[in-house]
Image: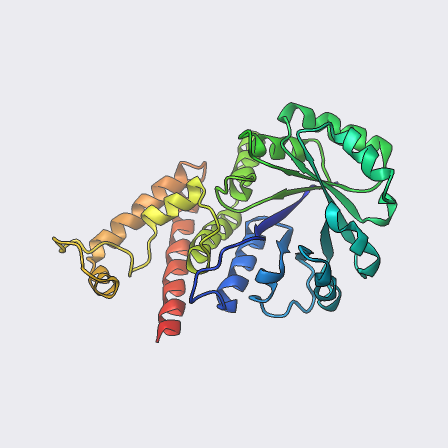
Length: 320
């Protein structure tokens, strides 16, 4: 069975003041994550209200943080609901498949599961999510032992307190975990979605798909518009450096720093065309270093540049 990737970067997100209700930007971000390779997008109440109503909701998972939120989960017909162990008593009120999230901390996984199973009927859940600070070498044994004992699908969500989350996520995918939960960006508490995808491609000697890279770069650009809480990965930082929109490219003629933010916007919009060309060529070369052939990296650089321009147009129209 193919491991599905769940992205939870819209859970606990700090939305930028003034752009927090920009449903277009948040929806485009979700689309970009799916393009990048995420199978499901986990949302909480704060992010759900900033999205257009998910009619089909085939790619959405709703996380309950408060007991009364079961009403939202039932009303919008999500694919799954995530229920932390502390809210397990709400299970009877939910009308959709439920993922029970068990935080194992640094304890023995099966000791924790035994305690939980003695108090809760685990067979009523659609999936069990184990989250904690795992040793990467222990992941294959955890998954194989778990699957020998139960048929309930397993989701691994490694935390990063010991800086092992990415390696644990890779180990979980390699051990055929039913699902792995990560978070887009270099977010300190979890494994990075885009770094996981690129590392897996490298391990299996696959050329990174231009479609995946386009989705990753779109997500990096769009998230910077509406959110203060989405971390930046190495790839995202590369995009920030080489693919800034017209308003963010430094003015080469400026000597002193502008005194106001508005003046900065005006001065920053004056650029020379040959500078834009140089940036595009540099971006193409950087993408080539990821293992892409020259023709593919050049095409992707053009796509991203157009994406950045289109994004700028949307922002400018909203400002007006």
